[in-house]
Length: 490
Image (cartoon, rainbow, N blue to C red; front, side, top):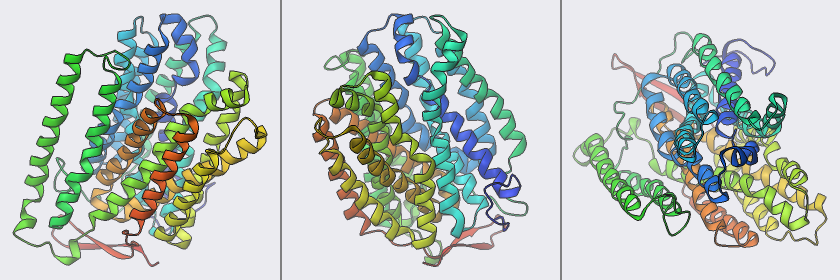
C-alpha cells in the first residue's frame, strides 16, 4: 500500500498506477463501443439489414458476461500487469478484422470476439486496490471507473470525425483501425510502466482458479444460486437470436447452446464442490472467514446500476428523438448528457463511501436511483426538453455514483479474490443490461423505466442484509505467516 498523498495532478507512485489504469480502461471502452457511432456507415457499406445491425449490437455484449468472470480469475492468478497488457494486445486483432470485414458473418464473429475487451474493467479494480489504503480506495476506484467509462462517450464524439477525415464510404474502417492501433500501442506502455504492487508488498493469490472459495455451508449454496442468472442471461441472448426473434441462429443451433449452458453449469457445480467440499467437514477458522452475502448484495446492486446504464445509454437517443421529435444528431447530443455524468458521478460515489461509510452511502444512492427512474417514467412530450434532460442527468448521477459505491466496497471483502469478486459483480452489470434491453423490446419506454425502478427497490431490500466492511481481513503469505489488511473503521 502506497503511503504518499492523494494528488490527482501527480504522475508518481500510486497516482501513476491510477492514471495508467484509467487510461487502459478508457481505451478498452473506446474499442468496445467504437461501433455505435459508425453504425449507419457500416450498415450501408456492408449492405446489412436493421435486424443484422441489432444482432451485431447484441453480439458485442454477449461474451462479456463469462469474460469478466474468466479475466477476474486470471488477474488474481497472474497479476494485473500481464493480464491487462495481454487483453489490450489480443483484442486489437478482432478490432482489425471487424474493420476489414466484407460480410455479415465476418463482422458478427469479430464483434462477438471483441466483447472480451469489456472484461478489462475488472483488472484495474484489483490493481488499484493494491496501491491505495481503504480510506482513499473508493475515490481511487471511482476515478478509475468513471474516467475509464468515458471512453464510450469519447468514441461517440470523435470517431465520426476521424471517419470523415479519412473520407469516403470506407472512412469508418480507418476509424476502427485507429482504435485498434491505440489498444495495441498502449499494451506495451502498460506492460513497461506498471507494477502489480508497491515495492515490498505481497500480491496475494487465490488457491484455486476454477471456482470461488467460500467459507460456510450457507455461502456454498448461495454461490451456486448466484451463478444461475449469468447462465440465464446467455440463454436469453440465444433466444433473442433464435428464429422466434432475430432469426440469426437455427432452432437446432439454439438447442445446442441451451444444452451447453446446462452442461457448463453442472460442470461449475463440480468445480465449486471440489474447491469447497472441505467446509462440510472442517469449519473455516474465524479469522479467515468472509461473508459471501456481501458479494451477492453487490451483484444485485450492480445489476440495477451498471445494467440500467448500459441499457439506457443505448435507448436514450431514440427515446428523446421520438418523445420530442428531434433530429438524430440533436437527440444523440442531448442523450450524451447521461454518459457525461460519469466523469464526476462515479468518483463522487467512491468519495462519499470513503467519507460516510459503504453501506449508508449505498442505501442513499440506491434509493435515489429508484426515485430517479420513477421520475424518468413521467417524461412525456408535454415536458420542456431542458427539464427532461435535467431529469435524465439527475437519475444518471445516482446510477453512476451507485456504481462507484459498489466498487468502493468490492476490494474490501477478500483481497486475494478481488479479481474473482469484481469479475462476478461486473458480469452482473452485463446480465442487467441483457435483461433490461430484452424487456424494452416488449414494452413502452415508461414501463421500461418503471421496471428498472422496481429492481432498484429490490436492491434496496437486499442492502439490509449487507454488513459494513470494518476491521481487518487476513491473508496468508507463502511462508504460512498471516498479514492483516485494514478495510475500514466506519
